[in-house]
Image (cartoon, rainbow, N blue to C red):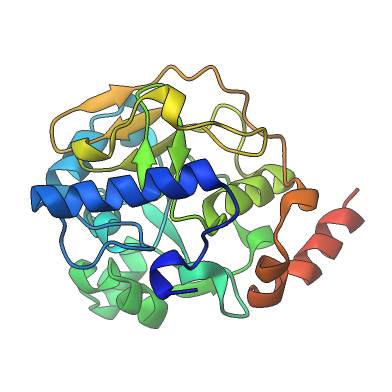
Length: 254
């Protein structure tokens, strides 16, 4: 299987939808860098981050969880300049620790530029490694997306990382049904709701921010209560070093 189809085969309809979204970005000339098998970067990502910051819950959020991908660099940067602590996952969760913590006060004291800390290389170098159980309550969640709907439907690049993270957060009580979940995408990544089937273990979006607008989805999709371990893929257990141990720790909590 080519790198462009790294996670293909798990859901045929979503595979086709992702290919269409990636191709549309390129056809419109609004992609920034390669897009296939990625959370695609796009022209206007900084404006989308600005629009996202207009969500009512953003201002009062103390802790923001944000995915590690390039199109969300402006989101992480805005959060740091707004004085918020940022939890950023290790890309594809491939290290022995799952997340890093970026505290803007600590970064400023160390003389680390926020522009550097907002990048994946920067936050891995300068962030504080943190385990799931050590996390405080998250006030605002940002996930990466390949295609989304105005009703809160979402698909990522196909690896299942965002839904797995959110399931773990819910198991540990640091994310609740009231926690807003948002994304930033290019407007061309919006698709009709009937093209994006939502499964029981999928988490729906409350906000979609594009370079044109902030969409309040008013989603009616019931959010999962935790991790559906039966749908975790064998390659996720293989490639995420801490996952089986974390599963055991969660089970031990009862």
